[in-house]
Each structure stands twice: as structure tokens, then as C-alpha cells.
Amino acid sequence: MKRFILFAGLLVVLLLAGAIFWWYNTKSYSPENSVTFQDGDLRIIVSYNRPYKKGRTIFGGLVPYGKTWRTGANEATVFETNRDLYLDGKKLAKGKYSLWTVPGEQHWQIIFNTTIPPWGIDVMKNGEAARDTGAAEVIIEVPVMNSPKEIEQFTITIEKMNDSMELVLMWDRTLVAVPVTLSAQ
Image 1: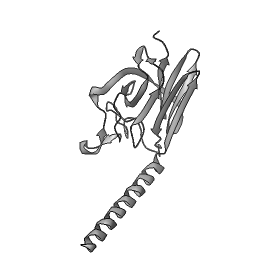
Image 2: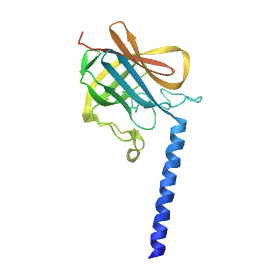
Image 3: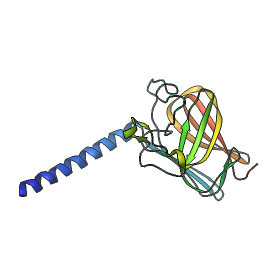
């Protein structure tokens, strides 16, 4: 009985050490980042992981066109706002959302879901995005712009533009800007 308890304890320690090692190494390739935008009483926080290009074909390759992407690496990207926002005229109530995209060559769908999965992909579904399609709060479509320079690491920013803002997603030579306002215009 003592051997069994000792063996079980050793097994738990090894599994825990392996999980920590795996988690640490995964995060080193696509480090965590968060963007905080503050303007008066408005606060927006986007938490995501930033994969590198590393010479790969990104959109239409690593990230296929027409398929849901977790918009970063590792965990699902989380978008949080303390005020109601309007995204291209559609209301997004204050709260916390998972942010998903469906990249296309000319346009991207930008999706804000009310559910936030613990991981960005479903390993049981061959690595497909773990997005709950029934939990979409807002879906908009925005045009793709070409970046004059290559962006090595996936980046999300929030830029102030007069009375509005833009949520900007950029990687490789692709740039997508989501219009954000505080009122329906």
C-alpha cells in the first residue's frame, strides 16, 4: 500500500512538472500581452497571445481563409470594456467577450462572443477554433488593408481617432481596423 501511495504521488508530481514545462514553453513562442486603452471613464482591455511569423505564410496558410481563428495563439483572445460600445454601428454591451475572426482575402469577419473558452482551440475537433457559434453578441465585416511593411509578431492596438477609435489587428502584411464609437452614429 505504501508503494502504491508513493508511486501515485510521484506520478502526480511528474504530471504537474510536465504540465508546467509544457505551459512555459508554449508561452515562450507566443508570449502573453494585453493592451489597455483609457480615455476619460472608458477603459478597454484586450488580452491575447502574440505568435511570430518566422518566415511562414500566415493568412491563407497558417491561418486559413474562411475558417474561424482564435485571433492570436494559445488561449482565446479576451476583449473587455467598462462601457457600451458601437462597432460599425452595432451595440456591444459593456462586459467581457472572446474575440474571434474569420480572415478572408478582401474582408474579415470580427466576432465578439459572450462565452470565453479556457483554450482557443478544441483538441477533440482536430484543432478547430473553440468558438461557441450560438454565443455571438456582435459580428461585423471589415475590409483588409495591406501593410507597407512586414509585421513579424501578431499585434493588436487601439487607436484614438477624433471622436472614435479603431481596434487594429496586424500581422505579416495584413492590417484590419474595426471602427469603435461610444454612440450609434
